[in-house]
Length: 71
Image (cartoon, rainbow, N blue to C red; front, side, top):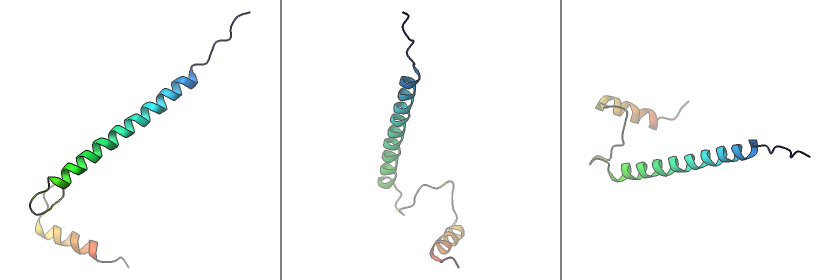
């Protein structure tokens, strides 16, 4: 009698799942380290990193929008 060929689908799927989980863990560790460095390495004014320079008028507008409750 000839042997039945074994399916490789289950092991391949398991490898893919564990590789994806491992990648997510490494991304989380990297993001946590970056966040920790940003907290420690802020400027004297305590400003966060932003997409670009923000002038004082825009900063005040953002502050007002954040403080004002929605109606």
